[in-house]
Length: 414
Image (cartoon, rainbow, N blue to C red; front, top):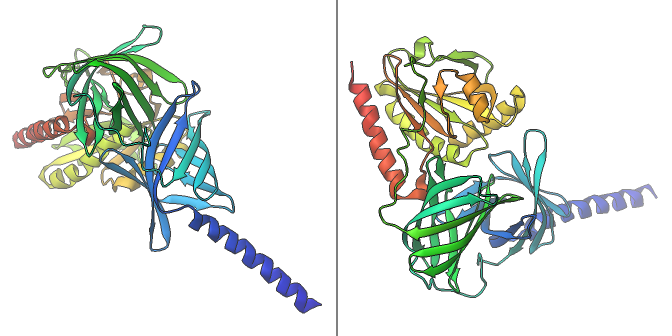
């Protein structure tokens, strides 16, 4: 009788293990199509690829040319849990083999934003199942205006669109940053663009009245955000100079601060390490995709310039003032990009008023990221608002060229 019980127990254990492994294997490798649903029933589509490498699965979220890798994937007998490497968000879904159904959860300071998530294996289309060619001539630069539904707020932007393998690619740039890698199409004289990067979920639609006018545009963001927008083609459209938006208050030419590093040790801009150096102060947040792009640029830049007399300090403004929670999220950012420079937990949140309180000498702080350039004498020479990342094409290239020229000139000063 004892032998029979043992055999039965072993059978149950093997069955359970087989069930868990089967679930892992049933999340099929290859391209998937996913949607996130807003509370106005709009669906924000994106694609991802499941890759099986050396027996372990990882996911690449696909937006235009970007492949955003996710390694933290776990399974139970009937569910899959996908933890975003940044931004403190995750997907929890029932795993039905070819279909996932569940939620994308974005953890905020004291609550969660939750959107319905669905995905199907084998669908490589984004907006329309049938092949659709780009009927209208939308490639080029567009002068764009976003307006809140109550018309109280207006944002001036530049749309940059191009064709790529039958898809519409591009982004919108504003004076405080860009909307990263957008992907979509044009069908029946209507434009469709979307993006999901683990922090933001975007959907843009608009009616093409002709080759130079987009009207009745809708911009859906997150669970409930929605703006109107319109655009006209304008090859000469420009934005305000990113170095002109933020400055120090009258009477100040230096900054002073002391905040704890990730190990709890206090770090000050006046420490010996930063004296007689060109110092960059990066205002960032682990919740901020543009900050991620800027960090991805600054890490190799720092490694190239650190022996020439340059240092960088990252000042993190998180969603919460809780040190341990903030530390955990910033550590994920640090580890993702192998950040070699100090990253400090300011203890202030991302609210503009909080930033102003943390550095009282700062005037008119506009957006994250912001990059402050300090010369060898400790004087603030320039402050750059926002970041035009690799999704902006020539704007990114131009920024890199001009920025590195500025740093070379400051390093050459006595």
